[in-house]
Image 1: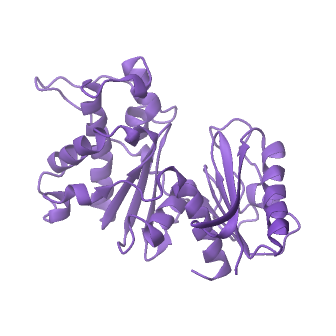
Image 2: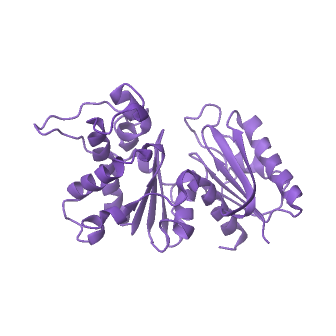
Image 3: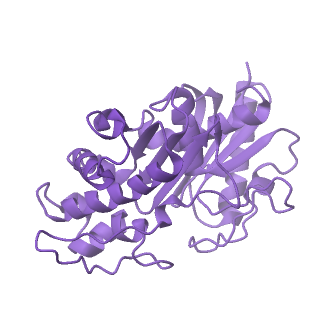
Length: 304
């Protein structure tokens, strides 16, 4: 049996696993995200120790992490963090540290690209190409699979930072919330991430009643972002996850807002009558990134 190392790098913790795949995990660990010098060697040690306990070497390692991160394999800094808001992590040698001294295939990607790949291969987007995955939590990120592979280009998609149109109320008054993104202010993330909800309402999203008017604004901005992704990428299915989507009442609001914003321009049942089966929850829930790390490891090994 092939034995894969999977690493999901997050802002508060690294979730690591060893096994034959996302449904065949033999060992799992959660390592707090502190400094690169402390966290990354602990990740490497867990992978090696877990493989030793299983009694066979790792076949490949997949890393799905927060970013931005260098994905160009021709770059001498492949797998290094680029400038990131995470204090102390800019320039961190993620891949080099985790794989130091190991001669085995490795693949790194963003956590959202990894999640998109996992949902495409085994989950809620299986059989749909292109497939889009968007997560709405502390920030907003997205990944897309086209032709069976995550999209890369100049860098990797930064889907939470697109501009979104301002909402207006029934009287035509414009929403004047400034947005919280330190780079763009009122981009999709700045207007609709969990932090934006809390800043707008003055309390955490979990404390807001389902009928609070802030949820209509949230649905507007998320639908506005999704509408632009639909127009540009033409995905066959959208998987929408993240902590903010744990509010059960939010997804139906997004469905309704998306229909309104597309204005029947795209003549397909998926964005009209069947929108609830077009924009769906993730199969892997909050473990989509870890499943994506397994998918990356398998791709690195040439087995998927």
